[in-house]
Length: 322
Length: 252
Image (cartoon, rainbow over all chains, first blue to last red):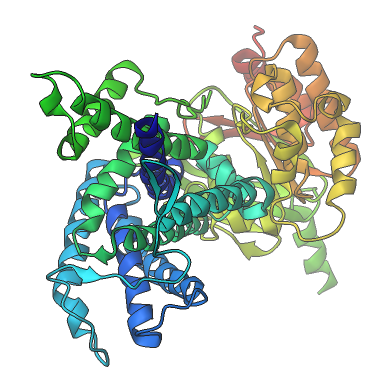
């Protein structure tokens, strides 16, 4: 029973992180049918943005009130990066064959990783550490520190609670934005029929920028959450997290926002439970368990989903443009 | 002096001052020219019909006026302002609403959400009033205001698309094949509504394959064939013209 509860906690924590990032893939795909493979780097840059904010303004402090400012710093870095990449790299390719922006995305991804790795300690006017190695992420009162033990054998990290809480907040905020604001309705209209949306007076270019920005803001939150959880950041952290979140978005049904959240949570839980319980099987099966196998199981799940339910769990919203 | 003015008045076509003037318009899809230099005018308060078979360039012309396509040559002037390089989302603000071919309602949104999207660019406080007006024009929309529009029949979707176009308070309403695929009864219903809008003073540019219905409503008509205007005249003139009767009204 403790094992089950512990994996439930682990799965939800991991899943919340995936969900926060997955929204960015799905929102952008829903508007421009582009898989932005550089989105993992937007998440990584969010973590570095939070770190930079801390190093510049609050070095050595741990008070909780610093955290919202770090999140704002993370969002400025992530949203700035995402909006810039849309403007410079994707917009000129809007009418190019699908393959062109996809390859561009991979290029941007490599560019951003290398840029952070080589340039972080050379930002003028700062004495940031080199990003060639892992950099410790600041620890903040209340959200990091002594873990909770609600019962024997079950540990809940403070950062895990923070992650799940941020997902809940973000999901509610996103729901409100998409359904209750004019810009959100414009987004829905563009995702259903871009040409007709233009006839309604909706500026599609602007909606696309908004989609990139919204996804980046959530990825920034995820970057902070990840930093607090694993207590360090590095320039490669966006790669696997991005792939997993992409898997989550496909799992839930790419283009569908609720799907991204559900897909993230399902993937996190599946990863936690499969690695745990496979490890407990008798030989020769037991060797396929444990955390070193978790990526294998996650992507195996992706393949199974693509074969048997390619539209994802909640089904992508395929619009019939008759 | 006064004599000269008089003479120029005589040579001008006997219609209202042009609200929309399309001049020598050419539009291409890649290397294929779909519209090959057409000219026509729509006067304030008029109903103007463009008729012609499939591939005549009617839909392309409307999509170019509303900014979804760009002309390769020629000009489009609306209320004295060149609009052929204005982005589509700003053309709505100038006062042109385009009710597209195939209705193109937003299927996953409710009727009311669709109608409100029609008023997307408006900031005034009278959107609620216009919503009521759209419901009065088409009572069925009010009965189903909370239903997803994708569940509607073709005729109901057409009503919704027209109501949505009217929500922007257009000076010029462009209707592309409003009767396409509708039952004769529903077609009549839609055409009656066009007449109602006309009586209220809406200027309408109507594209139809159903030439008879379109010409009966029209002050002016233009017959398009493979990207060119081949005939023009008042609605009545075209209805009684032998060429039009043979080619488009199925008579011999």
